[in-house]
Amino acid sequence: METLKISSKSNPNSIAGAIAGLVKESRKAEMQAIGAGALNQAVKAVAIARGFVAPTGVDLVCIPAFAEVQVEGEDRTGMKLIVESRK
View 1 (tube, rainbow, N blue to C red):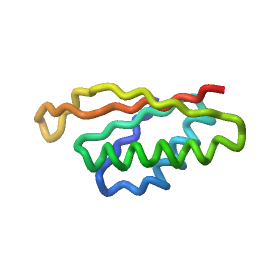
View 2: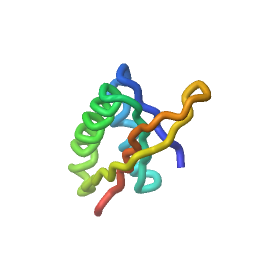
View 3: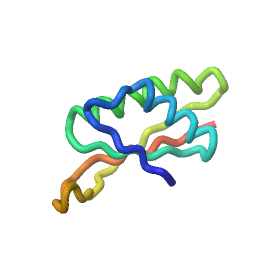
View 4: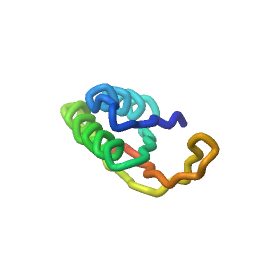
């Protein structure tokens, strides 16, 4: 499973397209965000992606979790968002 890494500068529409594509392909997408700005962009992307797939009868759900991530050799705590289709 590919993990989408989100930053505060990520474009929510682009992320939403990637989420929609992954959900259509494998019914699941996973994102990783470190920091409030990155998490904000990730949540916006989930809302946009729901709009993309809703006309096809797919309902997306988002499951948040903590993730331990290494950034430049340093351990950081981030958020992992798992997006699944509920059809």
